[in-house]
Image: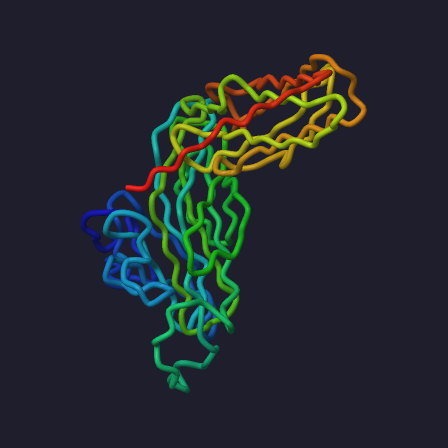
Length: 336
């Protein structure tokens, strides 16, 4: 979403753009707008204004630059004292039969009391850059058309579009994603937003979009050699260690972990599912275990499609000693 922005020109014209060019829809290169046209009285579901958000725009803490996730610009659109069902979209060439993930960072600024702006101009000064407490109940999500169509999902659905979960993401950036298997040589990726109430600020921001072929992503788990636990038979212990799960590219891939059956001891793992930034905690309780060596393993499955390094089987070893003796080395501290 960097570079120059230009006005959208509908290929077949559009009633909301009577001059043949949508001067209020300034778009980043490669992206197109879509919106539901207003079909009734009032300020509901009208075409929003599109423009570039820049590093000069104030964010929720009143600090410049918070409306851009990275770089110098992000795609913004808004409906001032109005609602919208709208977003942006792009068609991308892909390989049929392969699984792809569309992910993009987004957030909204939805704030201010509802007013009939045309008949009662607002008297509230526009100095609050954080959402709420009377906000528009803004939902955001992303979708993919696996057949690569270029329809406007004016009903908020679209015939073939597979949508990810919708959520409210006020003031601070969060990543949205959805996975599909391509059914044609083109995919179409969409963003979506839909505020319920015509409050003063119903602004949406999108940045750092990526379309990733999941087969080209890789997962790694550390420590690579697994986890090792030691305890004394006479002094049972509850011990905890963590596994770190990373993905390349560094996107919001999910993972799921299970304890492989057949081990000689049973660890507890939390959580069972997570995202790339979430650690996996492994807990071992040696209560009731006789002296000896024990083994188990945790299986971690990354993503929802083919992925290098997935599934990963992580070995766990436990040694319960008859007489465990521990030596604590001295630690020397040096000050500069």
